[in-house]
Image (tube, rainbow, N blue to C red; front, top):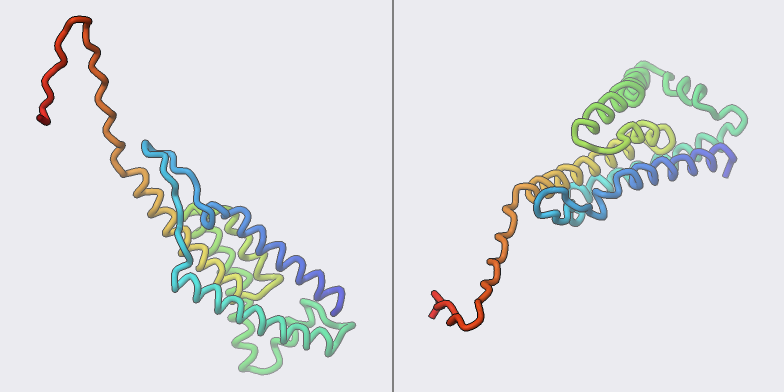
Length: 187
């Protein structure tokens, strides 16, 4: 394990932890602010959300396997610059490399920041930062999983807000001394 891999690993874990910490309401539930003041929750992990996590983790494992091999094959020249240069080794890889760079450096941050803010997610830019230390597919998969939770959370909050308030209990009737009790309508 090199220092560079250790630092990138720590930054990857830290950026992922920040995403979960700032959006913890999606995982723990929160208190509604409507008349019912009910609990808002995204519920359990859905199948789709679980698949996003699964494929993100598979991508992370595969990416780290190859990154460790790359770093150990050239320990003194392993860097972002040399890694990027190595991507452009022939016409086929040139095509894939420019696609990858455009998606990771331009489209992912634009998409996650704009879409995340529209959906009410907190710190949506962290998914771009995460992609720099984990992998593009990992951060994209986790962003999509968070979006799934945000959709369910927002739906739950809307349902909590639109639920009718419980009817107030009838006020107790006070009897004057010497007055006969009122007749019951349920008799």
